[in-house]
Image (cartoon, rainbow, N blue to C red; front, top):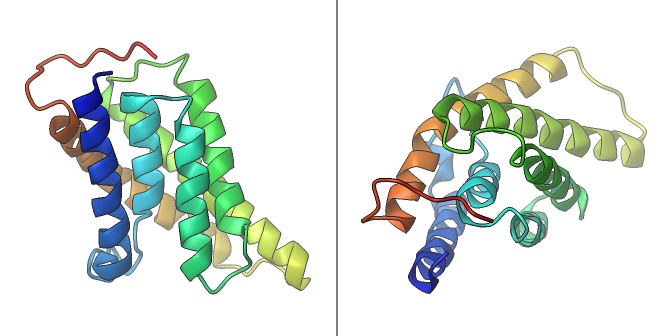
Length: 169
């Protein structure tokens, strides 16, 4: 990837972080906020560099953990595992397929949500409520719906002049 594309992706990361903390409460589907950080991690893994997506996941997880009210490290672990799965899956699927990106975001959002819940349960000794399964599916579904549009938008920002994106990582 060329340096200007990496710079665009870095600036885009800063915009996503700012949007997540200042405006994301206004972006809701059915009262559930999609996970913009997870969408960005999947975008980075598919379109930028699947190896450095693990670092991006740790960085975004630490940023989320610093400002979240949950247990420190739970978000980071969830994002890291989702990025690790993205790393493995990105080798085996067509990374330009619109539906595969949405499906990947759905599955990885479930993984992140469940890891966060399991860590929280392990540390608090609590259990899973009856709404947990529905909330996790709805959260992952809203993330996947938004991801289907946002990942294409992110690609157009990072690769403005190319009609075909080459993913040789």
